[in-house]
Length: 476
Image (cartoon, rainbow, N blue to C red; front, side, top):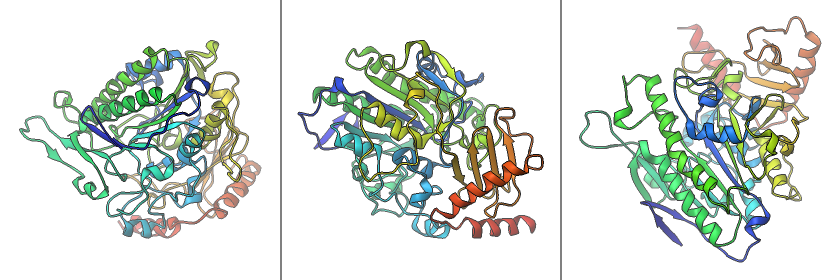
């Protein structure tokens, strides 16, 4: 069936007669591309204002020690979709054309046999929709990837990095008379296609999502909705009257504020609808740290593509006045340590569902923390492997290959365990003082766990590419 609304097209099957919507909570996941930890005003940004996201934080919870499971987009999206380390699915860097995927030793798309939160929820009567960037298959010349519906979504509307219905961006600079087009080749990845100004595309996703939610309400179904904007991923295209001096930092701040403005109607729609406000959970976070010289990592070291905190620590806001403990509203959780893979089993728990038979998540149930009832953390360590093509990034590096966090300790090292860096994140969240020489026993214990995890995962071409990059750097 084809739906057309507000100039936006979406496709998806529908069925009625499912469980009562009021029985299970609705879930909206806003997953923002390349947003830095310190970019929201409620996370310390004094240069840009994000009042709509800030309003959620004022009524909900902010998390200080939330992580994503990769410092780059596709693997981070794989993790939050599957509840598993993206290394399991050979997605360890952004998905590109076939030749470059093969060069780096990564998959062309997420295997549709992977467990997904959307599929599990749909099997239990949820309406499921994805609106925004996908980047888990269907990009560049990879035009035979599975449709987004193969991963459990009833409807989808994506950008140039996904199969099926999509919004593609028109661009306009100050002084231009006509719009330009970028990523036009994405039309080979399916349609229908709607072209609209890049500065307005988040509103396109929001309008599509709100129409989807209205249909879910009419069908008496709970819903799970992804809103995955890419405004703050370069290139930055704010409205022409907000270009300012045209500097990279100014453009970033402008698209950040414009994204917040366009998300506002969705938040108000949920807040003002009595059928939604007390039974909907909204989560807002980022897929990785900000790009160099664009967003802010706050007090943390590093940026996108690195395993330092600025690359993998994400802001997280959880809003749900009928679900989150009332005495937790408006507070910071500074002690719970967990990551995107933990959201999948946690949200299933909040929805009252057991983990399906035969499915094993790397994530753990930390739902008491998400609901503000108890500041629990995941019990097992967190592990990361750098993107195989990112030994250096944007003039920075060489960067460590692997990382582990367990308790207050974080260890980074090379693939063979050499060049260890050890940080006490309770005392030194900015990773300024390497304690490896002072705490050899801690280094030894963490390194053994980290190397065992790395060896137990499918391998990519990171060692080979890293050596090539190191040789190039020495010859410059």
